[in-house]
Image (cartoon, rainbow, N blue to C red):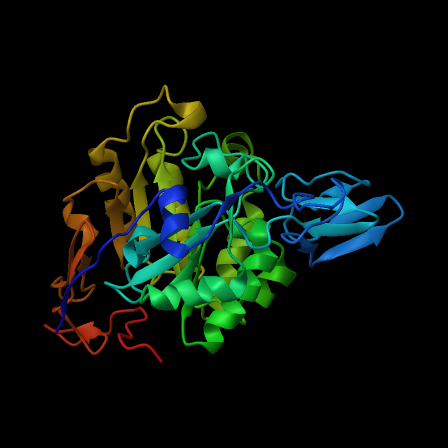
Length: 381
């Protein structure tokens, strides 16, 4: 079998703009010459999933369901009402563009050793105190330095970079839904997969629409306590659990990340309940990534998660019946690798982004023949 070195070609926005022949520019609302400052511009498009009500415009994209008057912006900061219509101001308004190993998402059971052309537009519908990308997630596209990257160009650049997939990531793709969906639709027609890296806080109608074009996702399950979700993330737990169940129902490849934050989400009893719920709802084959917290943003005073806590969380998940459990953000940890749930053999060995998959044969353990859940295609359609 193959031994591949997954590589990373991360760039700053300025260097990426140079590589792609793109230009840095301001946000996409009234930013074009000769256009009124309040008028939608090239990088604005009528939003999908909203209702006009007697009390204003109600956005139906995420469970916040913001009710907006003329000129108001939603919690995500990139949807605004203009002349009675809801607009997204994130369309083609990329604030981050990188080529990443697919393992960085993290996706460990989806096209291992390949790269993903990764894009983001500013905005998020959560307010996580620990956000690692707060400079782009907690602001509007009007406040970031953006590049002009419309959907057809995204796909062209992904193909030019020999990327097997396009990832909608870094901020929250639910908030730039129109941009991501239209890009994904073109990508599918060109034989490129689509990856959704998300907090899972999305309404059911747009989520089911996504399944027409999305091939895989990693959803952040931030805790298993509704009160913690409200205080730490500014959201509710129940819609995220619904998202996970719908992914399972629709058969789209799913992996789950749980960031273990000291004094917030490191309660092992809560982690046990979370894992029991995942197994009870048929999600035992979904890879579960316990990720180490690094002090950032509004939780910079906290320590890093101890490796022993991550190890105990992994043991709890395995005992609960989760079959593929990983430890992330701990370079060199043995639990970066994939082990056969039947015989324990190493199926895929990982060290950082170096991937050795010779223990995987035709989607099964080379030692005992047990099927390993995942999407293991290695040839572009």
